[in-house]
Image 1 (cartoon, rainbow, N blue to C red):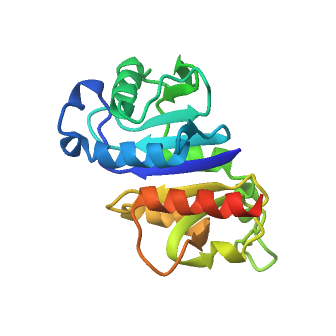
Image 2: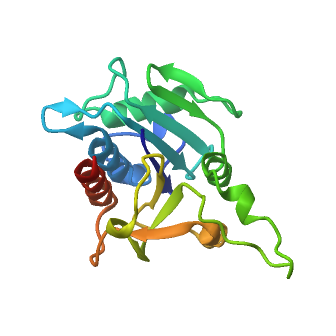
Length: 209
C-alpha cells in the first residue's frame, strides 16, 4: 500500500465554503490536483493507494480525511471537489473515522496525532540515551519531503513508507518543530508542485517493483 499525508494550513473545513472558485476555499484546487495525482493514471485508477488529508483551515479545524483505493469510491477527475465537499458536510466533531462513502472517511484529528499513529519509529525516537539525549531512530516508516533531504533514489524502499507533503505555504512553525524528528527525503534538485512530487514518488516505486 502506498501511503501519503498531505497537510494544508488553509484548506477549509466546512462543505459550504467550497464553491466554484476553489482557490478561495483555502486552495482546494491544489488539494484536487494532489488527489488526482495520487489515484489516477492513464485510463485507470491505482489500486494500492491510501491518502491522508489534514485540513487546518476555518471554521472547524482540524479535519482528517482518508481516501483509499476502492472500486466503489465515488471519485472522478472531474468532481474531486464535490467528493471533498460531501465528506466535510458529513464530518463528525470527534475522533474515530466515519466512512462517508466506500473508501472515503473523515474525522476530527490533528496532524501530529495522525503522524504519530502512522510512524512505527516514533516511540523509539523518544527513548533517552545514557547521556540523556534523544536517540534518533532509523525504524520510522514516515518520511518528510524536503529539498534538503536524502535523495529518494538512494533509499531501499520497503513498501510501507508514508510520505508527508506540505501545501504551497509549507508548514507553520509549530509543525516544523514537530517534524524535526522525521527523516527527510528529496525527489530531486528542483522545487516541484505537490502534485508533481506525488507523481515522481509513484514513478520511483513503480520502477522498483
